[in-house]
Image (cartoon, rainbow, N blue to C red):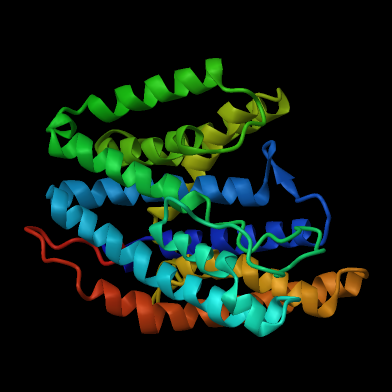
Length: 338
């Protein structure tokens, strides 16, 4: 499966854009629009994790090498992240800070932000940056999902390295155990962390490994899953509704090849850049134009979309794409979008 034989590029870019739109409400001090009991941003993150599980499982089974698998993941996550963090600290931070530039650059807090480069210690404030905003001093509210995703890369790689993925029942059993635990033990409204988002990653991986079962029946299985999910949402069984609906839509729409949509990524895969750049750009735009009128909301959204997409395009062509050219060769050629 090559990137022009599916709609995954389009679905991921749409999800990244919906995260931006959802966050824009929060940045203006407004409630985020909701769907199936979660914000648009929350649902979009679930879409990301479902697609990630589907494609990352594909990557492992095409080339089940622990070191090559991890190196591909490093090349996909870190180069773009490093440049984004440096841009935030060295360019956006001093421009948005209420501190004098000399004080900003001599503050230990400024350089502590570079912990974000470790992925597992992301975020934190920057001195004087975005203070007094509705999202007070929050520099990048999107980055918390990256360590969660990296943990699931590692879990999948370890399961594969010790041979458990050779058994067809391993991923379904892990998924069932995790879902049962969350549905019986997890407190409603608790933050979506490694365990909760892991459900979506695993269901994506399971759908990848069971394609021969469900693809011939996809024409009725996917609509049935969505219909059931909507019914569950009306019954306020939101966690089940999200699992069924998000997984069905993300993979069902993503793996098909729709005219025009399947060519959406021919100029590049901009979804990661949109996701990691959006929030600090939105905060900066909102700080600049204000958030005390409706027209400022819509102007800020338009400007944020334009600047974020521009940064994502630059990130892809000058950083991410070039980094991915160093991907190790595999025994069977890995699809270009993995």
